[in-house]
Structures are given as C-alpha cells and as structure tokens.
Length: 327
Image 1 (tube, rainbow, N blue to C red):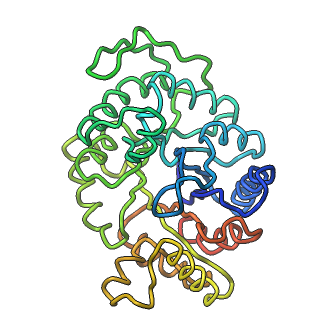
Image 2: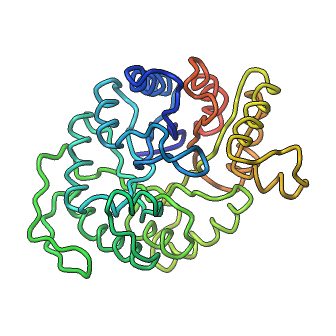
C-alpha cells in the first residue's frame, strides 16, 4: 500500500439537484483514477465542517458512498479521511471496512482518528466525552480493529469496549492498510507509530518540520524504524490554468467563511492561507514541492474545495502533482 497522491472530496455542495450529487462524486473519482491519483477519500461526517461550509450543507455517509465508488472504479484505493472512531462500534467498523475491501476487490484503506466535531455528536446522540476519553477509546478500538483486519479473533475487555472472540469474515487479505489521520504530536503520532502503515498529517504547512521531528520521536519510543511509516499531508488546493482565476476562487472561498484577505496584515494573511496552495499548475506544483515535500513528507492528499467538481480540474491537478511523487 502506498498513498503518494490522494484526492479528498470535502464537500458535496455542487449547486445541482440531489439526484445529480452522487454522479458528480463518481465523476471526480473516475477522473482522479484516470489522472494517476492512487487513493480517493471522502470525509466521515454527518454535517459540513465549520471551516468549509454550514452544517446543513450536503454530506454523504462515508462508507455507503465509498461502496458506491467501489462499483464505479477499478483501481483507485478507497478510504475515509478519516473515520471518526466514536461513530461506530470497533468490531462493526472492522467488518465495514473489510466488506468495502471485498466489494472493491482489495482496494480499501482504513483511515481512522479519534473524532472531534462536537455538534455532530450532540445532535446525533453520540457520546462526545473529553479529549482524553476520545483518545482512550481510539487506543482501545485499535487493539480490536487491527487484529480483526488480520484475521485474528480478539477477546478484549476495556474501559470503553469489549469483544469476545470477534470473527471478521470474509476477508481478501491480511494486510488491509491502516491510516491514522491528525496532527496530535503525542497521542495520534504515538498510535500511528504503534499501529499504522500511513500517517496523514493534518496541520499548517509551516508546522511540518516540528511535526516530523515529533513523529520521529514517537517512532523511536515505539521501537519502530521511522522509514517504515509512510506520511502524507492534507492540502487545500485552488488550481486553474489561469492562476488569477485560482486566486479569485481562493478569495471567494475565504469570504464565504468570513475572511477577507484584502483587509489582513501580512502575518494574518499567511496564517489564514497556511494550508492552501493556489495558482496555475506550475505555481501549485512549486508550492507543494517547497512547502511540503522538501521537508521529507512522502506524499500529498489534496482537496479541490473550490472547484473540484468542474470537469477537468482533478485531471489538471493530477498532471501537475503526479511527477512530484513518482519514484
């Protein structure tokens, strides 16, 4: 398993009738597959996130959507970025992602994190708990899920979860990849060092050197060769053949979230755009190379939050970025 170039769909607000929503998702996944992206991701949320839109904007259930994509694609890997552990019983999650693997012919990746969006938890009736409790639950869940993905039948009695010889069949393989996602230097990175094949680092680009140093420490503490844990970075990309149009898309997107770039100081502007990569294909490729890959990150996962549903934009991004991550 390798995730060097991933495509995340962070929203489903396409200004189209609902019947045209999923066909637009399928079209993006197919375009990503044809453009050389190795993995397609959807978010595991019930509401749109505050940094992207309003809670009542369209949001599909992740694993139902991924199963639909499995039937519509042939080679691209499929994953949530990332599954909220609090939303599913761990053995059920192991069964769900393994079924996705069977349905897709061995293309599933388990992306998982602790969960963080309190509004969803409260309104859907899931226990939110404290930060510490959510990570306790994630640690227990990984002790159940990872063995089940490998064909074991774990019996586990924890503070939050219990299993009794839990069976997970059928399975295609014993090495279904596990991806941890997040930016927590102690807990998330520690779990990644112990359990994961891949860590998707979610942070500001300027923080990457510190994050990678912390990850090296967690791997050393776990007795793991840092080189065996693949990494990627989640980037918000606004790209167009016309770099000025891309920058206009950025301005419009930020204005929709209450941020007017024209009124910000240089420091505030840099902070507001620290996860964004904007311009024509050459400009975006140069930014990704210098701000992300040159720090030692293995791969890149992008979303095209402003215009990814426009035919040809995913292909444009793939052509610009694939050469940067191809050995």
